[in-house]
Amino acid sequence: MTYESRPATAEDRDRWREFVADHPAATVFHTWEWLRAVGDAFGYEPAARIVTGGTDDAVGVVPGFSIPGIGGRTVVNPFCEYGFPLLADGVDTVAVLRKIGGGLGRLGARILKDAGWTGVSGYNAAEYGAVRTGETIRLDTDRAFDAVRERSFNGEARRCVRSAVESGVSVRPASVTEYYPLYLATMRRLGSPQFPEDFFVNLAGELGDDLAVFVAEHDGAPIGGILMLDFDGTRMIWSNASREDAWEFHPNYRLYAAAIEDACATDIDVVDFGRSRPGTGVHGFKRQFGGASTPLASFVTPPHRANRASLEGYGRAAAIAERLSPVVTNPVVGPRLKRFIHE
Image (cartoon, rainbow, N blue to C red; front, side, top):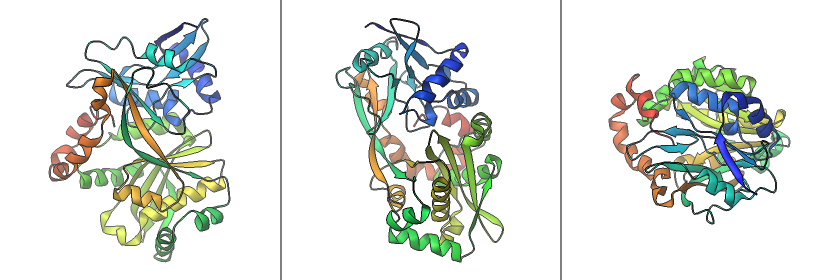
């Protein structure tokens, strides 16, 4: 079969939504709503593709944007863990990967973010390069929270959650505008460029009830927050923030436990803790809640531009960035820098 790939346009909205809703491997980052929120906030050139084979019926969709950079444009689904193609059963994956890898221009590259659980194969045969970008931990929550806490949480996680509760840390639903000051303070502490607040607001508007925010409070003051994206039975912990001066009260433990407990009580079967690098403090923290680790990788064509998917540079820059925090997180500078960082 001969496959064709064409740009997805506004007229394809319903077709895209239907295909994503019916695909068992789809994530919130494949949704039309995610793509629209990213496009509106950052003004990227749309590069999502619809794949057809023989007829005009879609046999695949590929999310993405064309993002400018010093070395040329990169087509990628930014700010997320997953950007792999969704393909119908029976599709020749290698042929499709080769098709969507064309037309990138002399300095262009395409990055497809994939994970061990998605079932997509054929990258090597299609001559894509590969870069490991970390791991994600996915916890089954299709059981009672008490069972998850006792069988999946390790002793330290249970102790810290209990300590937070005994210290009077409470958790309540909140809005993205309540969460944003906590997020911004965390980005300033880390020296990391921040998302513009409008992006969070737009994302909440697009996803509606599928975006949830919890805020942890102590003595009536917010000390931490967590932002979650839900889709088709999977909850993605996409952003987490806390006040350093309140860490003695374990707000992050309390928030993760609350997010997991809420998932157990609703129709969420899996909580995905998001990307982290093994050996880091963040990865160690997430492992305390149990779940299965899955490797994350970015597949790049042409393969000699695989370095565009590497996240090592961000890690090496972290110490310097902390010292430059006032500049990097300036209200004008930070969001503009973020536009060129597609981790």
